[in-house]
Image (cartoon, rainbow, N blue to C red; front, side, top):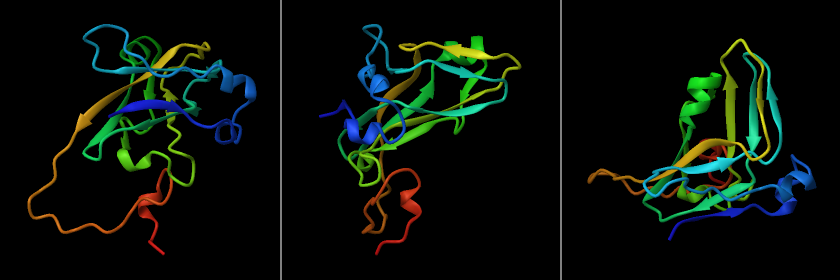
Amino acid sequence: MRGFEVVTKKEYLKKRTNEDYREIKLPTRSTTNAAGYDFYLPYELILLPCETTIIDTGIKVYMPDNEFLMIVIRSSLGFKKGLRLKNQVGIIDSDYYNNIDNEGHILIAIENTSDQEVHLSKGDRIAQGIFLQYQTVDQEMEIEKKREGGIGSTNRKNK
């Protein structure tokens, strides 16, 4: 089983407004054979040239343990507007879901690499999420560490 959910209002209101929360839309595929689920912008955004911002999507994702969600910029935003993901490709691990720091809230950092101001409207499709399976090596040692939080939490020491 895999799917998308909206984070709680309490979580979303840590960074955004109640009005923005009402505009959150679950990711969808646009065509029958589309690999990616489009993420929608829940609020208007203006990016100045060379500016980076973090988009609070209001979305979290659940999936089997042997899968991850790859986040990439929509091709049209890269080609036509010079936008890219700050980290190039986002990887959402299955254990990010409902973590103690932010419920698994998917944040998308985008950068305007153009010399033009870019206007994005509420409801614009900004990125795609693609579910993929991964494999592990036969000789892997047992991993006891469990995710304790959100972004960057795998670098924390277990208590």
